[in-house]
Each structure stands twice: as C-alpha cells, then as structure tokens.
Length: 122
Image 1 (tube, rainbow, N blue to C red):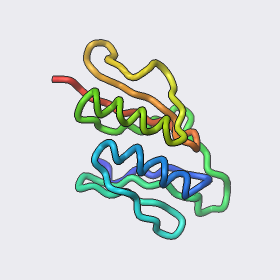
Image 2 (tube, rainbow, N blue to C red):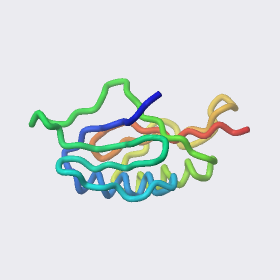
Image 3 (cartoon, rainbow, N blue to C red):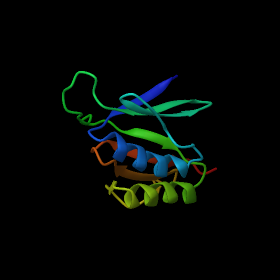
C-alpha cells in the first residue's frame, strides 16, 4: 500500500545516527544521505528523514504514529532500547503485550515524531 514514509527533522546528522541505530535492530542497513534527506531502503519500501524543503521548521503530526514491524518481542525491545540510547524518548507504557494480542513499544525520535515497533505473536 505504501511506497515510503518520510518525517521532518531539524538535524540530519542526529536523525541519521538515531535511525541507523533504531532501524539496524530491524535488519535495515545504514541510511544514505541525499542532499537534504537521509533514506533507508528495504525490498518493501523506503523510510526517510528530511530537512523541510520549504525552509520552515520541521514539526510532528499531532495524533500521528509511524509503526515498524518487529519479528519478535525481543526485536521490539531491542528497537526500543536502541531508540532510547540514541536520543529517543520512551513514551506511554513500557514495551509489552497489549490486550493479549499485540506486543508494542513506543517512543519519540529526537524531533518528537511518535514511533512504534509492533509484533503480533502467533
């Protein structure tokens, strides 16, 4: 359904460092800097962080969340730990099973974007 997801950032180097660590826990290689953005590619799509091209400050979506697929609860935990260790902020409940059907880990990136790692146990 989606070709890519892109978030705004105020600091490209900080965003690259944060998302390299975060996405690395999901098996995604380091991002590639392309002028005013950093791009992480997988066979299933692309994620990017960009300096806003209109010159205005980057801002976060109120009510928006970007979800990343985790293959296990342990991978979601590693994702969360890497995010916090690299400038992210833990939010909501600690990573864990919700409603007995889905394992979730939430955090905000250094720019305030809300992120989630999700694993659906079998």
